[in-house]
Length: 150
Image 1 (spheres, rainbow, N blue to C red):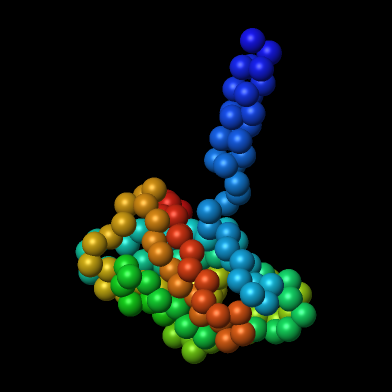
Image 2: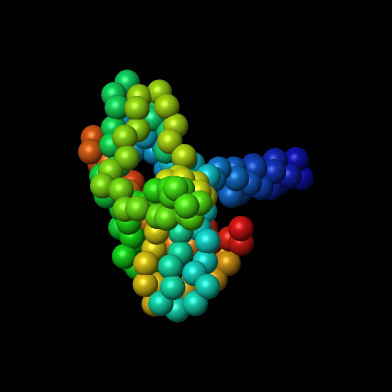
C-alpha cells in the first residue's frame, strides 16, 4: 500500500510540475533577451487592426536591436504612438528598437507596440497569436501571444 501511494504521489507531483512550468508567453533566446507579459487586443472586425504588447528584457552584456516582426495573423509592424501638437495621437512605423544591455523596453498602449494590419480572421479572446521577433544579435524568438480584453 505504501509503495502504491508513493508512486501515485510521485506521478501527481510530476504532472503538477509539468503544468505549472511558468508563463507560456515568456521565451528566452541567445544573448540574454527575454520576452515577458505578452498580450494582444483583438481586432474589432475582419479587415481591422489589432495590437500586441510585451516587455523585452536584455539580461546580456551586449546591447541588441529588435529589427523585424512577423505573424501569420496579418502584416505586422513596430509602431510608436506620438502625441501631435494639436493633441491628436498618431502612430508611426518604427524601423527598429534598441534594447540596451541590462535594461527592459516596454511595448505598451500609448507607446511602442506591434500593429497587426488587415486581419482577415480576427482571433477571439482566449486565442493565441504567433509572433516572431527578430533581433540583430539574438536572432529569432517566436512567442504565442494570448488575446485578451483590455
